[in-house]
Length: 126
Image (cartoon, rainbow, N blue to C red; front, side, top):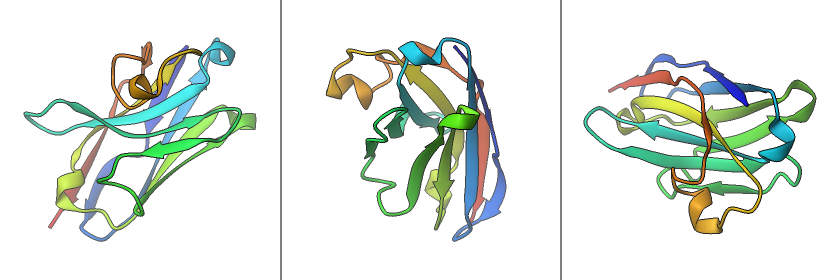
């Protein structure tokens, strides 16, 4: 599976941004798509995830109500719509794919994801 993330940029607090993650390759065996982020000097953290087929989603508490993950199966693309951005959302955002059979706990952690995109930088100024 190859993942290509895009859409990052420099915005002001309160603005919106939409990230895209285009997937190619053996996506059928990796139905879970996640977004993670890594701020300078910090570890990589879970943001949101979606199941390609069921559309089931999960969000980190820090982004609930502000971010929305969605997918376009025809385009093999997953999106992360980010509204009401805050300076603390500044990070490199990564998309990732996880296989069937992983646990609920693994879905919100990094260890369950086998494939990672290259990351796209989001900078939110105050």
